[in-house]
Image 1 (tube, rainbow, N blue to C red):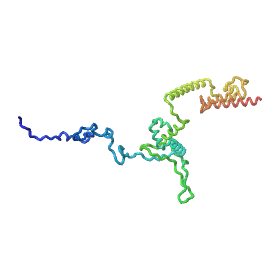
Image 2 (image 1 turned 60 degrees about the vertical axis):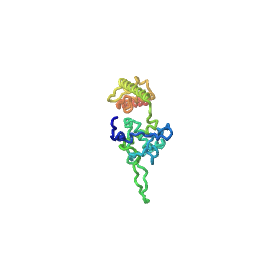
Image 3 (image 1 turned 45 degrees about the vertical axis):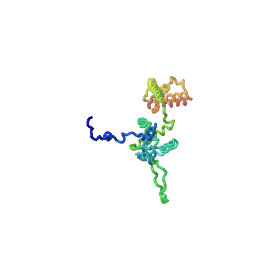
Image 4 (image 1 turned 120 degrees about the vertical axis):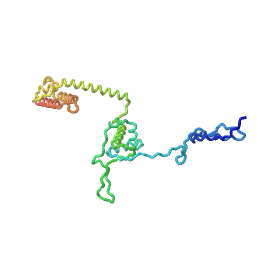
Length: 280
């Protein structure tokens, strides 16, 4: 027989490179004497996977993270502040929640399209309070502000715009949420109306009278209002024709705005009315 090897074998050397996290979560219990190994050799899987943070936070709870929000004192107009606080109370939230929801759901391009409500004016102040000690002169009123707790990095304009979006969306007469198909249909309709308006303006430009210098005569005045003879109109018809033509040449809201044509149209009406009244 070969000689027996007397060297010592270290049985723990394969286990020295293992860490605690590499070991199994549960080990089988020792075999009872004279018995068999039980079917369940460890805790339930849910119990093995549960977090181990137990104590003042409760089983499985996460520690409370530090709040990074800051306090903003946003100056605004008193009427705007009232509208914001009324909306927040009706919705069961605070004003800061309205800002967070708008910043989350509304794109910046839409939000920036809403004009900034602005800061309060010189006369827009809260009710003055009496000075301590019973003085007669009241303390000057403070500018209306909204105190909000939000994430850092915001400016007052962004906060006011977000609140303005919330107030506008709450008013059905101001803004509405529509589907993209309905929006496209309305946009196409507006484009068609604008094209027809331009075509109508071109037609009116070709058919309308030209501004002329000098004194206005009866024949010219009748032609401006669409009459070919002084025997085919009366005062009521002159007034009616003037009201039909005035919206076309009105310098502010007319289809074909022209201050000179509007002035001539007024002179023509006055001249014809004066002529009809003097001929009675």
